[in-house]
Amino acid sequence: MDAIQTARLTILPLTVDVAQAAARDRAELARLLDARVPDDWPGPDFAGYLPTLVELLAHDAELSRWVRLAVQTSERLLIGDMGFHGPPDEQGTVEVGYSIVPASRRQGYASEGVLALIAWAFDQPQVQRVVARCAPDNIASRRILEKAGLRQVGVADPLLHWELPRTDR
Image (cartoon, rainbow, N blue to C red; front, side, top):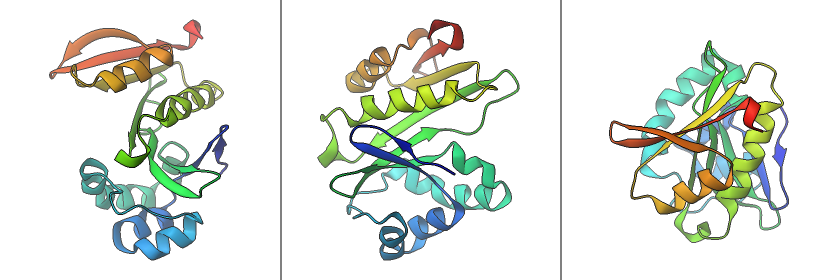
């Protein structure tokens, strides 16, 4: 499974081996990624989801194409997790998500990565729409989603809902 490459990022598939290392052995994770792993990665949301993700990946290796980690290429530094919440659903919808470690925020990595992920997703014939959710007070995420071409389409649970149909590319 191939990495998604941008000017500054290598966005790697989260294989079951990498997920197991992320959950249990930071030194092994660093070796597998050939990158330094900051002390504050993973964030609490991803850390809480890792055990479930390990199980899901063990039963469906295809999931690793959609769930990914972002490495700052020149520094060989893991800067966050970004990708999709899973493969496309029956309508061809994928939900993009991302989290960047605090020391690497405000440098344009999330925008760069999300743009590359969306381009990659629309290269997959089954993807018809990319969606996202973010908190109303998360101004940085709102800007990232706007830059990526998503439009706010609603509010629920109390998150803002965003979408980009394939036809809007």
